[in-house]
View 1 (tube, rainbow, N blue to C red):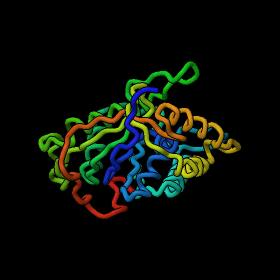
View 2 (view 1 turned 90 degrees about the vertical axis):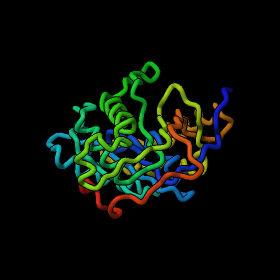
View 3 (view 1 turned 120 degrees about the vertical axis):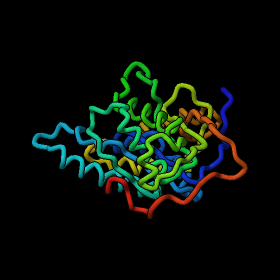
View 4 (view 1 turned 180 degrees about the horizontal axis):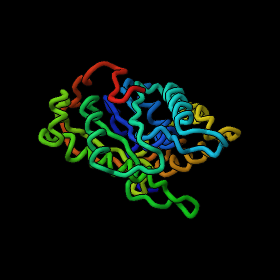
Length: 260
């Protein structure tokens, strides 16, 4: 059994950034629930609204986006997530453009998280049965490029300063679904929240019960660190301070750059 950190600190404010609705629930649902229960403020940022993810005849992108946004809000409630932000990029065509980087810098400067969570930008394959969605990789690349160095550089996107979004330094990045995991979070007490969250995505999992698969995943991860059930991460510490460098979020809860 490899050495793993099984007692990492709980963030004060965590921003979780993924490409599609249901991505955070598969990757970090148990951890998000555990952090929320411990008093952390968890914010989900979904770059797309999953508006291409359907084979239903007659479905439109607009209708599907509305369905999936509501499903994600319901799933987030199961995990105690503080807020859900949708950037509403087109599903299936995501690229790590400067425009996307700027939009992510904006939300990071607005909410000022000490910890950012994203997927692994270099993961193309998982086992011999799954090719990682290109949107997942694009979202991860864009997120990391926003975290460093752009969000902390006052002269990067100077028009954001004019909008009131001052530079901010993210202290930690947690990468999910990585082959280089060094940190495990015990989700034995919140596995039920993760499963309940996934069940909310009826447009994606109708007729499928995630319990067996998700429980098996969590137990397999937990075995690597002597835990009953876990989610694994590659944890990067970008800066160390004696107390969390968290400032009040700009604006008020619910005041999203793109209305949710």
